Image 1: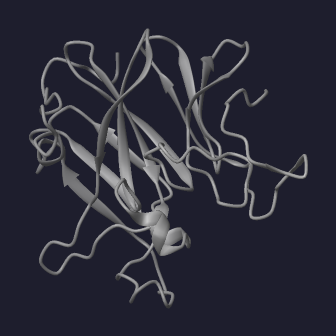
Image 2 (image 1 turned 90 degrees about the horizontal axis):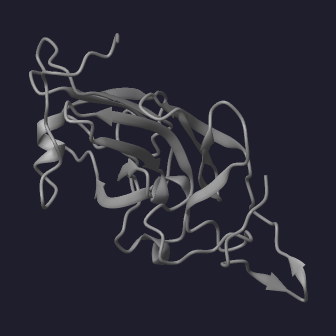
Amino acid sequence: MEHKGQNLRQEDDDIVEADWSPQFEGIVIDRATGTVYAGQEDVGIWSGPVAGGDLQLAYETRGSRMSYVWNPESVITRDVEGLTIYYAADGTRYLLASSQGSAHGEVPAFQTPPYGDSFVVFEVGGGGLDLKGAFRVETSGDMDAVQESDGADVISVALPGFPSGVFITQDGYAGDLDDLSGETASTGFKYVDWSAIAQSFDPPLKVTPEGWDPRS
């Protein structure tokens, strides 16, 4: 597997590797095409056939200021984490990727939109990854916001309490950090109605709670 991007940073012809994390943190397989998507910290999202073959870097992250991957136009701040796919009844599929961002310790200047502590949405298909935008799970009443998520899952079918489908995410801090200056004792999970996420996009994402069977 070889990085083929054009956004490499070098100093004195030596690749700067300080603060560099190449481990894979998320993987998902598109059931419709047999394409595997794998998220590599500080690098991006790789794609390729699950049956075997070369992987291609489908989307780069911003990386770290001290790592060799540096794409300032990317909407994924380090680190890219868990991946999941929403399957709509008409065949539309959305790949969702966790973008940890500010809670992962980036400097404040790195956090201008987009999109720290967020989930980036791509439509997937024959043309690769089509960026649709990103969303955050914010504070609501007594419920704290999601920070530094390591992963999520989404399902389009209606479930008890979630008639439009549900997005479930791990929250790295069960209780928000005070300006990211401390640590909390535990993590947690958040459940979000998919229609609330879909309607936050312009145009809205698909909401199809009937017609797709996850068991088939």
